[in-house]
Length: 167
Image (cartoon, rainbow, N blue to C red):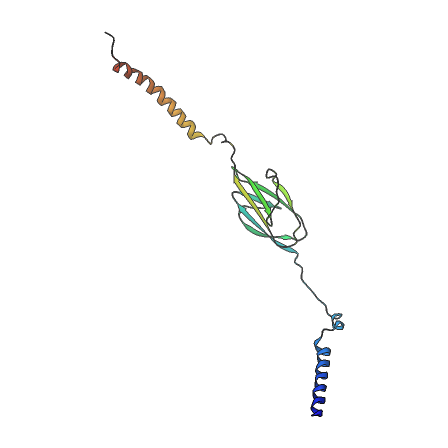
């Protein structure tokens, strides 16, 4: 019985020494480890368009939602051009308002540090009509004047026919 206790005790010590020696991490091996990583030189910039207009980045113009590649850590010059009859509603960069004054059409995006989203929204211009846009109203007004010019004398002549005559 005593012999079995000694065997168990020896086995426990060997198991403990094995666990310490082989299962615990050793800082000695970390000195020889070389870690490598690939850092991308470009990131994706998704340009989302809402409404009618164009976005210019560099020499390229975009009129619909698209994704481009842009160099990292490089500010990007952007110009926004609304279509005729539209104006810039808002410009968002990664969900945050970027363009405070929608009247200015050029701005600089912050340097890309990861994939980003640029959202440009356009709205219809609510300015008064420009020359030539109200031609149908002018035509209707002219027709009304011509009709009135013909109808008034005719009604005057009919008025005399229906009024009682003095005897």
